[in-house]
Length: 157
Image (cartoon, rainbow, N blue to C red; front, side, top):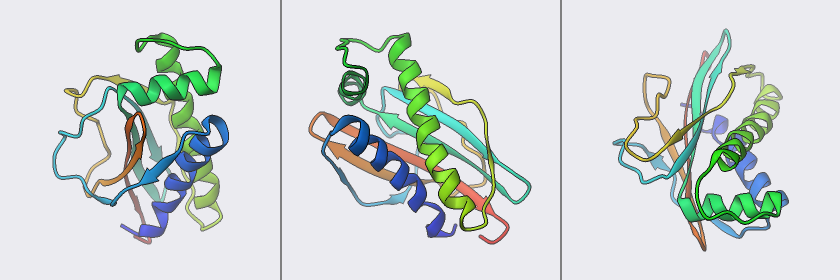
């Protein structure tokens, strides 16, 4: 997998966290996913596809982080994952992918986005496009962790 196709997804999530929430974060060591055992409370998932590009993206949030993100974006505190928080996760997934799509298009990689789905809990497998590898980009915040999982294959990769 061409590492330059990963950076736009990092930029997308960084932009959302910086511009919409003011939540301080740190990007940790990027690595290959080896099992479906990374902890998460709620995940936004989207397929990426086109004639020359196929892949998928998951943005996985710890409970306390997504509740803080929701509060910062919408100005309303919640104490549990509800339908509104799930909608927020879907919209964040859309925004991150929209940013990545634009940045990748500038490099000649075109793809279409499906409607994001939201997966609750950490026991449901994330239905990534196969074959692997799946790249994990972990972010840490004061409230907990977020991680991006992305797999993308282009004709050039």
